[in-house]
Image: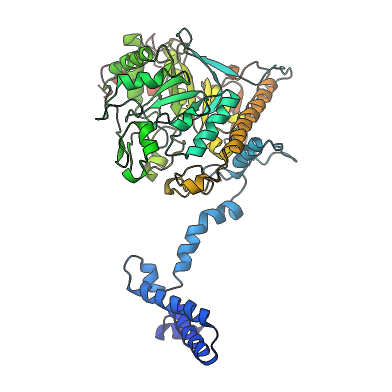
Length: 541
């Protein structure tokens, strides 16, 4: 900085120059207005800026505005538009935050039925640590259909043949009415399932008749008494609806496991209150833990009771893995009671939510790979894997994402944000503000009108359809007949510049019946299995 400017700054801070200039502009424009009867608009502009500077120096909330009157607002403006500038101008195609432009573009193209092919070769760095691929066969198969299915609840009165790719849990209230309508209409057309989220079944879930997975959280929305406890009578009324195919007991979710929630009273509209069975305009509370059971044994009996009350529909639970001994306690309760859930959905910590504390989003819960592998290995080691189907969720948007999770033990995958992108979500990350620019995550009637239900329902269908067609091509290239045949021996991972390994050799897998024989094949079992008891979720040395 020139010396003269430094000396000037000592006498009169340069940071006040814009404010001073506004004052001079006010004097000059006022003179022109009085003398020549023109320029009145400029008087108002400079008067506003002078007044703004006075306000900035007198307010106490923002230090930067007290030190930099008027001009300090530029900082807040740039901060406000920073996400958009980064997303549209600075972000690389493969920068994941949380989804890369390439991932989002793939969903948009498939949802719109546009060309999803890539010219000129991969943009991935195939020499980078962590790069993965699926081994192909010299004898590819030819499959008659891409409509891959998995049977859940075999042997029950009402088993369900589910698609291997479904809509993950998102509640009405978190999503707009039009978003729910479009998702369910797309699911109905494509023959796949739509998870209600713990906000229960709204009129918008029912309108198009798409298959539903009814998620029941700790608030027991849709099946609760006035005091918030579980109501068998109200459960039966919803569970026996032919549209409900699976019943999912939510223990925790990946984005904020172990964290309850409160929907503030002003957001509890009559529509949301009706769906949840609560009082309109009063705080709607989701406790951090369930009240219908307090031990693993009680939980297994509760699952059996739900299955009975539903008329023989598959009942399971969803969780994000936390303390390993708590999951092991559930597994031991299955052995002790002989009661097993029909399915378990493992939610990865990389999962999304409308709003969660930063610490929970970034540092609570096991990622999908570790959580899914632990659940799969435990069930294999107890010879229970054939009785329990495994679903999973956590940043699944492409066919390769699906085959990779199946290689780790999943029978099917759910996707939430993938289907949000199909609805038109642009990852503005304003879900918690009520000001979603595309009408997906808002209850603002004007904003959600922008989401045209027939158009978006078609895109939901097309995204599912195109993804399964891509999955079919991958399965054929690997020489297999079903994505369920993909194992960890088919996926290769680069470990360093000169070494690659099959996931089968890189990750720990358990032999069938190993835990029943008393074998503790890996450290997590040796350390935590002895601490688990079916009678309690607490660790018991």
